[in-house]
Picture 1 (spheres, rainbow, N blue to C red):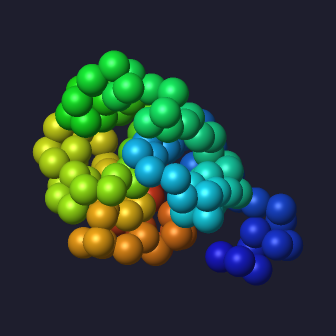
Picture 2 (picture 1 turned 60 degrees about the horizontal axis):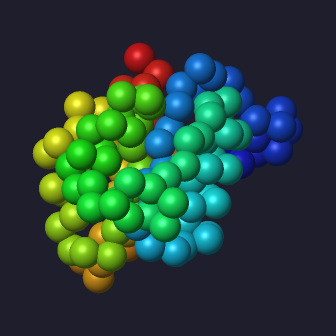
Picture 3 (picture 1 turned 60 degrees about the vertical axis):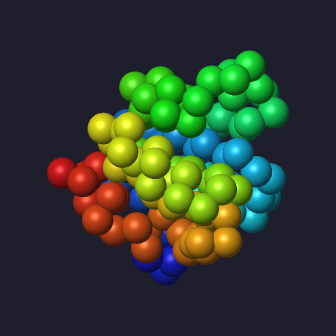
Length: 123
C-alpha cells in the first residue's frame, strides 16, 4: 500500500466515502494517522472533538455516535474509558474502528489494517 500511495500520491479506493473521527481525548498521532490514511485512500474526514461537541452539554456517547454515523460511512473512536468503543458500536449502524479505548485497547494507527471495515466501505 505504501508504495502505491507514494507512486500515485494516493488512491481513489474510498472516493466519495466519509470517515467520522470522534476523539474524546487528545491524541495527535492517532487522529492524524487515521485522517491521513482516509484521505490517501481517496475519502474525506469529518471531526468531532469532545471540547467542541455536544458532549460538553451532556450528550451521551450513544447519541453522539448515532448522530455522527448519519453523516459518514465509518466511525473512528478514541475514548479514555475502557469498553466505550464497544458501547458505541452497539448504538451505531456503521462500522466502528477502535482508535484507543482507555487502557483496554491500543490503536493500530492505520486505517488499512482495519481491512474488514474498509472492505465493507468499498463493496
